[in-house]
Each structure stands twice: as C-alpha cells, then as structure tokens.
Image 1 (cartoon, one colour):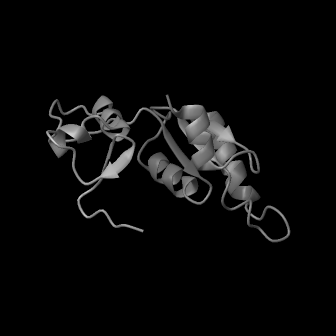
Image 2 (cartoon, one colour; image 1 turned 45 degrees about the vertical axis):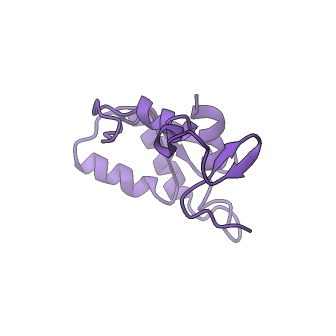
Length: 135
C-alpha cells in the first residue's frame, strides 16, 4: 500500500504523484467532485463555496430531530425534495422493527410537508440517493 501525501493523478492508466506540464490545481478542476460542487455553488467565486442543495436525504436515526427542529422554526412545506429513509433503526432491531413510532412520524411528515418516504426494508439511504436522486 502506498500513501499519497499530496494526492494522486491518473495518467496513462497509472497513478502518479504529478503530471508533467500540468498544474495540480487545474487537474482538480477536471474531477467529478469539482464539477458537482461548482454546479451548486452560488457565490460566483469558484474558490469560495456557497452551496445550494437541490435535494436532501436523511434516515430514521436523524429525521425525527431534524423535522421537529424545522417544525419549531415554522416549517410549512419542505422547500426542496426531502427523502426520509428507514434503513438504520429497522434493519438491526432484535425481534423486529422497534421504531415503528419514528417510522410513522416520518410517513406522516412526508405526507404533510411533501417529502418522499422510503418504507423500512426497502432501501438503504446511500443506495437510494445514488440510484434515485443523483443526476
């Protein structure tokens, strides 16, 4: 295993520490991550990120607290698509789903505020986001 202290580049099918004649900062601009971040950057300055999210996702361990905080702040409708997945508290429960109240809370909030509810045992948050939300 080799540790790349300053990053690595793929050149000619091989990982290298630098690409002759190429500035590392310019190479970074050709990455998928850079293009995604810049597409969502509203600052007008590529070096100062001000990200505008177009979708959000949370799971049953976190969405109850997130939504309760938003409701206390005056939430009337989710301002962007919000996916509520049920993949953490349900899959590891001994004796079945032990967090049905959290899941019912998520379902009713998705209905009331316009969210997308993913029932328990249907999808994992990372997989759902990758397959259903990414463009």
